Image 1 (cartoon, rainbow, N blue to C red):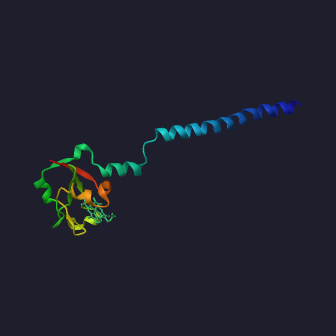
Image 2 (spheres, rainbow, N blue to C red):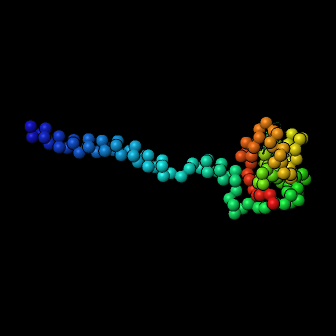
Image 3 (cartoon, helix red, strand yellow):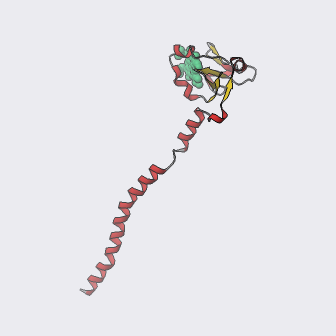
Amino acid sequence: MRDDNTRNRQQTPNLHGIRLFFIALPLVLLLAACGAPASPATATASSAAVSSNATLKEYTVDELAKFDGQNGNPAYIAVDGNVYDVTNAAPWANGSHFGQYTAGKDLSKAILLVSHGKAKLSEVPMIGTLK
Ligand code: HEM
């Protein structure tokens, strides 16, 4: 009888602790999920798409024309007042897009007529604005 009591007294705190652990665990995980910053992949994707305002440069139409992707020049295009860097976009190799469009231009009107529309702009970094 005395032995039983002793055993019970020893087991109760342990069971209590285990129960507390399983109640606390989901709460801790939930708090961690809410407080954690966005995953690196998400952060990279969004920062790659749009440069911070501090690094955005203003281009005139004449300045933009120099970025035609020819002779080693970077290839920039403008749409709706924003300038995008397509230098590293495969479909814009040497500043030419399927032989139909060339970089260094404001293509705001042209992009409205294309099947992929403006969706593709999210794949290239926005690096400036057009004056
Ligand atoms: C900004 C102005 C742009 C114009 C005027 C333009 C125009 C075109 C045209 C005429 C085609 C041929 C097929 C079609 O009519 O849909 C095409 C296809 C394509 N463009 Fe563009 N494009 C532009 C921007 C971009 C950008 C920024 C990207 C990505 C970096 C891109 C990626 C592609 C790809 C991958 C295709 C192949 C077909 C598809 O996946 O829809 N384009 N584009």
